[in-house]
Length: 88
Image (cartoon, rainbow, N blue to C red):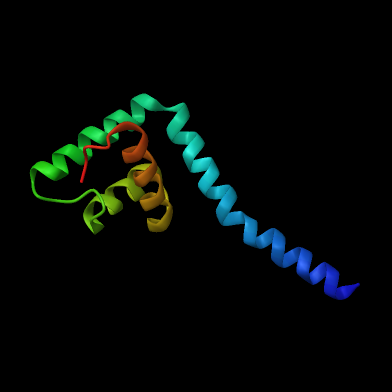
């Protein structure tokens, strides 16, 4: 019985990152104007030779959205994929 509870605990904790990523995707889908604004910021970075996946761009998203750097990177990927595929 203890082993079953332990495995359930591990399984539940392993789902957290997946649920977090799903929430980030929903945030991007529900806020297209915010995403387009972020696309404009990424274009600004690109015009200065800075990639949207650079540490500087990820730090910007992290601070703006109050996300961890990993979640900021995931959020940026969703924004770019859905709203501004021209961004590098």
